Each structure stands twice: as C-alpha cells, then as structure tokens.
Length: 239
Image (cartoon, rainbow, N blue to C red; front, side, top):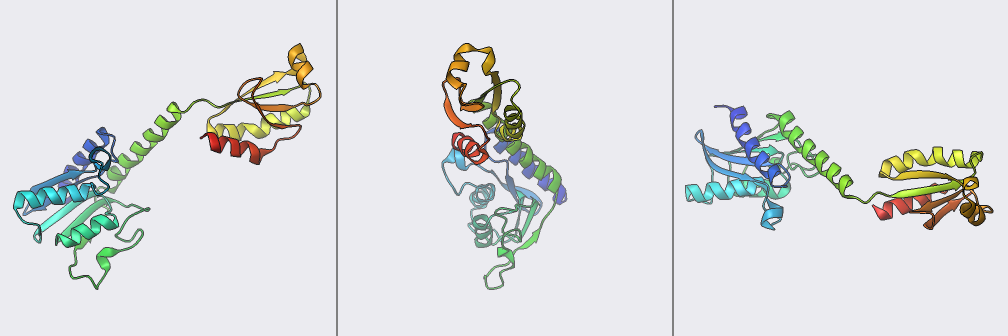
C-alpha cells in the first residue's frame, strides 16, 4: 500500500463531507500501514470552527490509540493543511503529512506561509504534497461550482425595463451597453416601444429612453444616457 492508496481513502472521507453539504476535505491517520483515524470537514454540522478534517482524524486516532501524541503516524489529507491544522499536526508529533491539492487561500505548507519549515518549532514533520492533486482539486472545484449555481437558482430574478422609441438610437445604444452588465448579474431586460402604448407615451414622452428597475412603475435608474456605475451599484446591492 502506497501514498496513492491512502489518499484514496482520504478522498472517500472528503466525498462524505460533500454529501453533507460541507466543503469536501477528508483525512486519515495511518500507523504502520493501518488506518487508525478518520475524519472529514464538519464545521457546519458540528457548529465548530475547529472541525476540520485533519482535527477530526487526529482526535479519532488519539482516542483509538489511547495517546494524545502520535509520533509514529502519518496523516493523509486531500487539501493542504491550514495554519490551525498545521499547528495541531505539529502538537500531535505526526511524523509525516501527505496532502493532495494546494490551498492558495489558507495553505500553511508554502501557499500562504510554511509552518512546517519553521526551524524554531520543537517538532518537525516531513511533508509530501501533490498526491492525487487532480482528483482532490476537482472534488473541491465541482463542489463550489455547484454551490454557486445553487445560489443563482435561489436568487430572485432582477428585471429591468427600457422604455424608448423604436427608432431611437439612444435606446439601441443603451441596450447594447447594458447586455454584458446584466448577463454578469443574471438580470433580464425588456424593451418597450413608447409609441405602441398610449399610457407609456403620455407618461414618458418627455423623458425617453428611461431605464426602470422592476415593472413599468418601478424605480427609475437613468434616462437619456446609461449611468453604468449607478446600474452596477443597484445590481450589487440587490445581489
């Protein structure tokens, strides 16, 4: 059994975390070729900011072995440990850490800082990174992509109405300028011809084109020209 075998075991733990809606990170502790501790991310379910995969696996191993020190153990984790977990690993006297994907935001093995290379600490752990990095990273990417899509599905649709004359070049210019901005925020735009509706003609004849948020009686954002910063500010506030 090699590093790849044990990293796959950690991946199973990560998949379990993902099924529970947690960020999919998994970890195992191995002693002399035997798995003695398992854990996965559970800060949401446990209501515990320290409930990272590494911490859970260390706790499980310590209970199983009856010792808070784990000097002859290896820890396999699907994501580069953060500073908190690196500290726990060092306190546990873990002999070796093997991780999968890099963590460019909180990684403590060189991505942000390297606690494992701090010579002034009283324990040093051998670290190997990049084992099954692609599947470990893909699991995280897929999870966050799905979560972003879920947020988009749950958001109320933002709708703008542009009221202007069918032959007005300003209306065409505003539509062209608005399109990429609205796509960015998942908003829609409906263009109404003021000349085709007597009610609209009476209300907006002196102020065309007009961009409204919502419906025909909605909040006016701008008229005559596109005030893009104002539109963006409105979109950002809603989102």
